[in-house]
Image (cartoon, rainbow, N blue to C red; front, side, top):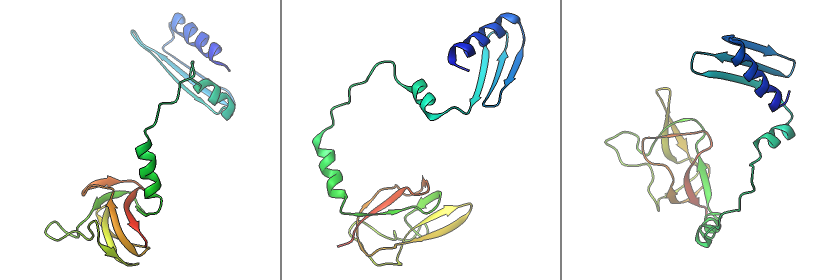
Length: 159
């Protein structure tokens, strides 16, 4: 079923006065709900990726934006660092408790197995240990911030 057929179906349902129409085929499900002022359409379709890319293609080509040279140089400089990433989803804390000092600061030498932070997940505080030795170059997350799985937390210079 293509876009034109779906649009025609929506127009037909709106004119017919029906309040809800459900259409299910083997690769597509369509639900059209009409109200006094609005029409709600839900389409669930398992389409090949090529067709989806054609639907999502922009109407006119967009020129790429000019990128400054400085960020590229910074990323090349950061390539020599190793990233410590979050192994879980939760809330990132730099201290073991509010009245204690941070586990690590920029410039702190760490060894493999040293605790670098704590991530709270479902009321459990998980100590995150370093898997590498080196020096903390940058802290990438603010204290008490939510973090996602595999989100970068620290940059470490292994040399």
